[in-house]
Image (cartoon, rainbow, N blue to C red; front, side, top):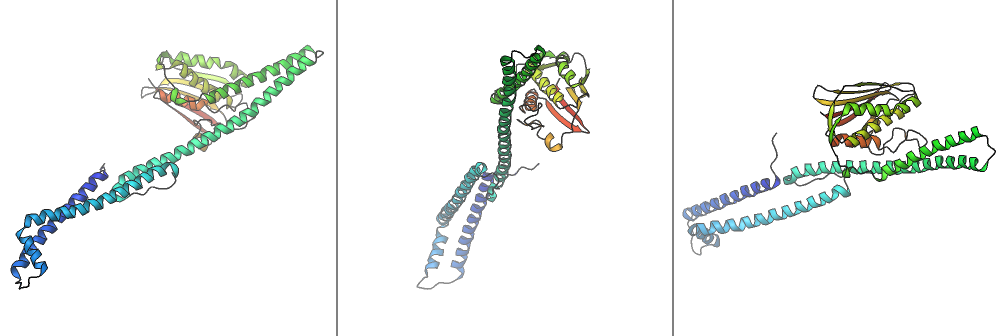
Length: 360
C-alpha cells in the first residue's frame, strides 16, 4: 500500500520547487532586460529603469545571486511562520486530545498524516476514558452494594448468637439450627470480605508468571472434582470429556485460578438440576482448547461485550448470592492472554459456552 510522504519531505519539496521557480524568474528577467536594452534606443536623459536593466546585463552573476538570496530569504521567512503556526496548532491539538477528546482535530495540509494519526489517538483516548469512567462507576456501585451486603449477614450472625447466648432455655435442636444459620451467614460474610480484598489489590500490571510444565488434563479433572459439593447443592451434573496427558507450559497457580473462577461462574449462573459439560482436547491448529457449556439464562449480546470487563456482573442485584466482585472473568481473561491465549463466551437458546485456547 502506498504510504504518504512525511510532512517535512512535502515541505522541503515545495520549498525546492519554489526556489527553482525563483531562479527561472531571475533568468527570464535577465534575458528580458538584455533584449530590451539592445532593441529599444534610449536617449538622454537615460531613465532609471534602463540603467537598472543595463546594470543587470553587465553584472548577471551578481544580480542572479542577490536576487536568489533576497527571494529565498523572504520565502524561508514565510515558510518558517507557516511551520511555526502549524506546530502551535499541533501542540494545541495534542493538549486537546485529553482536555476535549470529542472535538475533531484539523491541521494544515502538510500535516495531514499527523492529523489522521492524532485523530486515531483522540478516538482511542476518548474510548479509554469512557471505559475507565464506566469501570470506576461500576466499582463504586459494587462497593456500595457490598457494604450493604456486609451489614445484612453480620446483623443475622449477631442476632442468632445473641439469642443463643441470652436464652439458655432454648431447646438444643433450636440452638443447633440458629448456630447453623449463623455459620452460613459467617461464610457469606467471609466471601464478601475476600471480594473486598480482591478489589483493593486488583492490579494486572504487577502480575508475574512463574511457568512450569504441568499435566493440564489432571489439573482440570481435579478442579472439577473439587466442585462436586457445589454441584450437588444445586443438583448439577458434570460431564467431562478430557483428553488424557495434555501437557502445558504455564503458571500452575494462576491457571488454577482461571478454572476456579470459571467453574464458580458456571455454578452461579446455571439452572438447577441441569448438566454441565467440560472438555479438553488438542485442536487441529495444534492449540489446547478447553470448552465449558451449561444451561442458564441467555446472555444478551450487549452484555456479552462486557462480560470480561472489570467489576461487571450479570446480576447487579445487591441481594443476589451470585453477585460477586465482578473480577473473576476479568482476571481469567488477563491470565489467559498473558499466556498468549484467548478466552471467549457465546450464549443463545439458554445455553452459555466458554472457550479457552492456549498454545500447546
